[in-house]
Image (cartoon, rainbow, N blue to C red; front, top):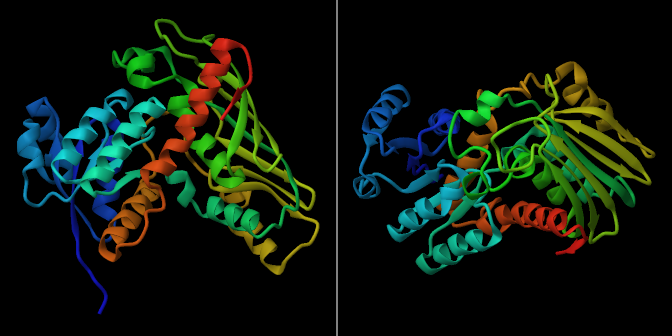
Amino acid sequence: MENTQTYGFGIIGLGSIAITHAQAINQAKGCTLVAGYHANKDRAERFCKEHGGKAYSDLNAFLSDPRLDVVVVATPSGMHLEAAIAAISSNKHVIIEKPLEVTVARCDQIIDLARQHAVKIGGIFQSRYYGASQTLKKAIDEGRFGKITLMDAQFKWFRSQEYYDSASWRGTWQYDGGGVFMNQGIHAIDLLQWFGGPVVEVNGTIATLAHERIEVEDTAVATLRFASGALGIIEGTTGSYPGFLKRIEVCGTKGSAILEEDSFLAWQFLEEREEDADIRRIFGKDNASTIDASKPSGLDPSGHRAVFEQFSKALRTGTALDLPGEEAKKPVEIIEAIYKSAREKTSVLL
């Protein structure tokens, strides 16, 4: 008989991304939203009245809720460590919104503590669960592209000055961890390393061109060298009106693909298979994503739902997570190296 155990989820940090988390948890099999924590009592109560669960403004009381099995950390990025320490120390499993933390050292603190307490730590990179992403990963793993030569990522988005002014932590190194690469572009960077394998060398240039009163970059470019020998380019900005969907390009000696969110703008191979026509039909540009690249909120919760369902399945079955802490750390390591390269004006080896 199938194990149908349901796990109780609670959210720390009830800002805009927590709405997507709550929707995803409420839709996910094996998951129930049982609690929400925010230091502001009124905010906690409003959130839980709308999305479910018991509202807490006392963190210790939240972590002592007997129904709570998994804590979802949705605080500002540079505060993930403190929230994770509290949850892990209470022997709760933890899922952390991207980035895992804003430096590799802080990521390692979370991972090490979870290992000591024998609890699971998972990251959130929902783009991996999109159907087109899964299809592209499978084709790469099967060697359909031949020798991969180039892998590029573009995320030319738009964020207004009001977006950065809306919260004091936005655009700061301490709490945002960086700008367009660490905040907005980390999903595309994660896909690049997931598709292409380890990155061994980076060279980056960053700039603040379109916004005021922020410490971090709003525009950046980087070149990469993968362990496979392939080269890569990353381009990102939050100063491109009206904003365009993130794009990943994979070029190889036997095939090439252009992925735009959950659609393919190109899917071509030297050796065609019967399935390719179906892939172009299902994921073709006629079925293109409706995600608005100018808005930070309003995400489709389906990718997050897949993350939560896989996490709860791993708990039920004792199997490995798709996105354990070690895996979620990888894009942080790449971005940290790019920032170092930009500061020191030299290539950085990973």
